[in-house]
Image (cartoon, rainbow, N blue to C red; front, side):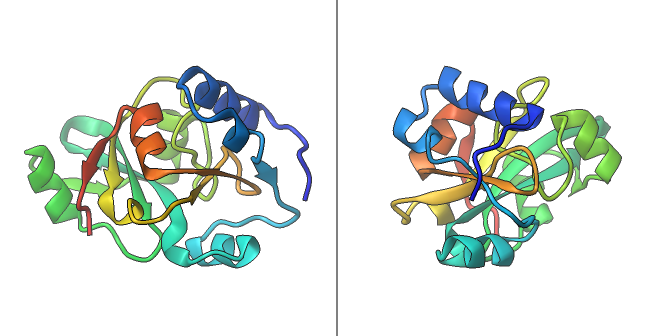
Length: 163
């Protein structure tokens, strides 16, 4: 495993640092030899449960507003449930172009932080039981460890049941 840097990874590290993430966890950010663009691939590479993977999924709310949902890799987001939680008409999966415009990152490597502007964020409560969860680090090869509470804090996110 490498710790080689990439602009997006640098932005993620800076955002985590500024957001008050535990420095010992930030130091464990890894750039893996192979891309881990799915929760299953990330879990296999890290030797953890798929539920410990915090997928960063971008959705488009009514009016073209981006929404970031950090969900456990063990299940899918229920967009109807998320729309109801937020009190909006609809929530739909965003296109790759929309994701890149909102986050500065490509699908498969979207991190919870390090975006051009803060995004409204929901953090899946299914991540809470794990002592450690792993999230993407801004590129498809980068991952970092964190906790549910830390994800909520560094993203300014709202805990929610999204599945």
